[in-house]
Image (cartoon, rainbow, N blue to C red; front, side, top):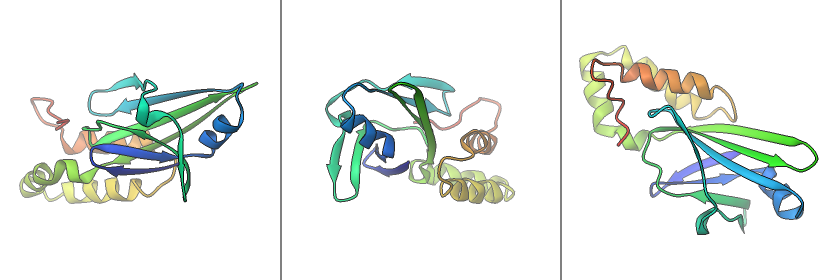
Length: 147
């Protein structure tokens, strides 16, 4: 699975989408886990979520992404259920806040770098990225800068 962020949306490419498009007896479920709110949302089939294709392959778009760390879970059911999971850290949603955190504690620089590296790992370490993100914003008011 490949996830890219643009204009408060994510674009997702996956082999599961190709299988879904080619197999009319299959069912595709898309969930979004918002790390900041600690909630899983079912993503409804709206215009942008219907599989589309371009030169890179078949993709879906999930609009209105305002949390900096999200896990995308695709489940395809045919005879069996296949699940694919990946996460994305959107640093641009936290620009000023991250600078403030670095000014108060330079050890947060290591956490920030780990978040950036985790974004390059396909399908791995989503729970760890979420924990790192929460540790960066661990303060008394529990404000993890969702919006």
